Image 1: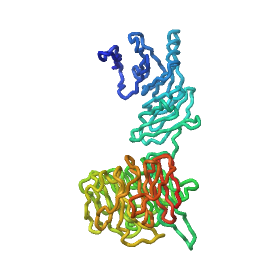
Image 2 (image 1 turned 45 degrees about the vertical axis):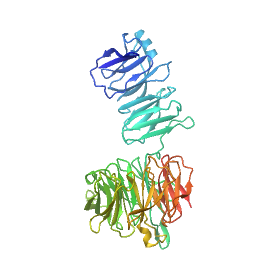
Image 3 (image 1 turned 60 degrees about the vertical axis):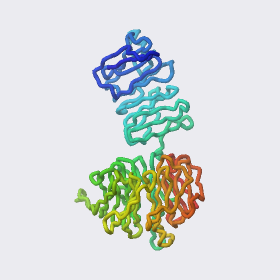
Image 4 (image 1 turned 135 degrees about the horizontal axis):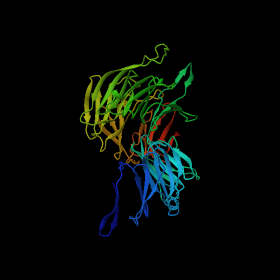
Amino acid sequence: LHCLWISFSSGVTEKHCVQTHTDLSQVQLACCWHYCAFPLHGRDICIWNTCEPLLQPLELKGHHKYITALAFGNLYEPLLLCSAAHDYVIIWDVEACQKKILQGFVARGTIAGILLGKVLYLCFSPDDQTVATCADNSIYLLSCKENVLAVLEGHLAAVTAAEFCPWQPSTLVSISEDRTFKVGVTMNDKPVVYHTKVKSSAIISFQRHLVYNNNDLIYPERLACGLADKTMLVYTSSLAGSPAVFKGHDGAVSCVSWSQNNKWLLSASEDQTLWIWPAQGSKPALILGADTFLKPARSAQFYYMDKFLLFASGSEFQLHRYHLDTSRDDIKSYKKKSRSKLVGKFKMTATQEITCLSAVNDFYSYIVLTAGTNRALEVFDLNVGQSVVTVPDAHARPVHQICQNKGSAFSTQPSEAYNLFLTTAVTDGIKLWDLRTLRSVRRYEGYHNRCQPCGIAFSPCGRFLATGSEDKCAYLFELGSNNFIHKLSGHTDTVINLAFSYSAPKVILVHFTFFGELINN
């Protein structure tokens, strides 16, 4: 049932209504200065004149499937209407269609797209030359001259709306059911394109050791990066050349980690799976499926000198023993040789979800540090198999990263330095803690972190810490000083993650609109 309501100073009055036989609650309807449009009986279009609603409405026929979206153009002459269904996206000239029907001819529109999928939203550019068509996880930029200008991909779920900016016509904003929005900008009159490296999140991990054979370097130092486009990239530390691409996840890659011997890579995803890859291969050696996880893993890593897998899911973290075997048997190719076995589950006290987890893998340590949505820190001793101490209200907000001083094979530190670790929370700065007393011994501020979970990193020598910032900079602090000593500027967006090289004085920075930048000391 469609009703036309007219607003007067005394209130709102119903002026006209039409009954249809299909449910249109999820259909985008269209309205402009003198017209409103809606699907009639599913496949036809009914256009009302809102100034004279009792006049015979204009009916347009052309679709063979149910119409899912309608939108009027922005210009008055000619007034355009775009309609979308599973079969076609059609652009109609309303005035021309009226004249055709009055002359006894069949009104026809221009087909701008064919078989694009279920279209949830349509939007004309300010000059009516382009139509943004939101179909499934993509946005198709269609020209009114019967060709596709570009296909924008990057969202992980259905795109529910897209709009051109009225005062900056070159800017297109889209939102999706993946709880993200993306912004595209036209450059030099070219169509808007989302670059494959423009993602809502990126997680990076440096290979911690170099591999030598007879004093010759076998593999250069490498950097792994998990992206929201479901892939993992592996670069050399210089960021030169094309990266190795690891594909297979069905959700954003939320965690990446190198094994201590550098032979394996771990990736965890929002699809509630954890994959272990050979560092020199393209197929996973082991996959832990959704039956292992209560929720997507927020933290995952190798543990205890690569003897175990450690990952947090929901309010607990799990410890798994595993065996990896990549040898092939063509006769018994169906038989999986790699396997894992649950050793134990450990639940964090009084929290709905563990937000981050940290443990040392470069030497034997029984300590696991966790943080939860209840804003607490909790220390587990796996030698006794239980929680040993809880620090309530460690920050004013939930901690989004714990960073331990893990050292490096290329530097030496006093043994007491390995008791230090960092925590950070949005709007609440960075805190330095001593594991022996579990007291905050220093606080670092002066950078901007109001809404994004900006990452932090310990330098391999244990003397410095680095943090991302929302003012498009990264900040370097000396551990013994509250004030930053270097501000690394020149980025184009929020710096969300970073990692120190373990063999050279340089740091890799990741921000939203560019994958990485290499900063040498």
